[in-house]
Length: 339
Ligand code: FAD
Image (cartoon, rainbow, N blue to C red; front, side, top):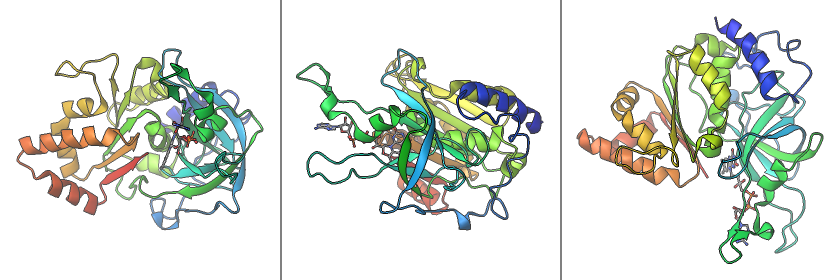
């Protein structure tokens, strides 16, 4: 069943990223099993910091595409980078990018910026030779000018969003092991909470568990539940892919959006991601009691609202919130990557 879906996904991946590779349907015909550990869930060989600042890897841009609608707040791009199979990574890891040029203040090279990898280890073209980033262009709104001040725009995100096919990117990593998928128990429920580009690692998870013919996908029996918060429907990311997964795997994939400028929470305020999670708080607490893993990724500012909400739910259930979180952390069920 998953194999049939895989074939459909190859076609849809081709439609999603038309400029990726001519290889769709040919080199993609096989299984995605050639980049696996032995056994596939064993995380002891996850690569970390293979390429460092002093000797970075040079990746090549395959394509850079704006992936939000005209009414989105800001611009987000999906960037596919060719690493020729020489820069392997696992789902949930990040790559570092060193933007070209030097800092204005001291003439030193720019420092590295981290970006969560938004593809599975096999890449969007499933060859194992590419990886994707989901980058929001950082702009600076000047209150005095009442306009964007280009002199203060974000260095690395603008560099990445302006790249063209063939451009070279200096990269480090892969970084991080906090956002890996616990694959040893294929019944584990995954609760993934994102704001904006925080969806990036989850896209990698979802492709691995539902799009690809991986050992992890074939074994997976749990429920992966994505909560995604953005400003409006034009700012949704990867919605077409997610809807396909939801349609095909209604028992294993759930998707809930919080659109702060289009929906109201139950108190009549803006619908933020924590309000959407709160709607299902009983179910989520039960899942966590039963061993689910919960992930948070996106802007730092998302965490206080989420923690306040979880705390108030815990109090209503006469649960000691601090102890509850401590226990989840001790059991490695609590994963946070915010920036
Ligand atoms: P910088 O040049 O570092 O500037 C930072 C901010 O300051 C910008 O908003 C800029 O407009 C503003 N600024 C610049 N000059 C001034 C000034 N003079 N006065 C006032 N403000 C000024 N980002 C993503 O988009 N996608 C991801 O998947 C992602 N994953 C991440 C994962 C991790 C683990 C971490 C730590 C971060 C991640 N980030 C991600 C954030 C990313 O690393 C960068 O921080 C982000 O892209 C901004 O970098 P920049 O170089 O564009 O901006």
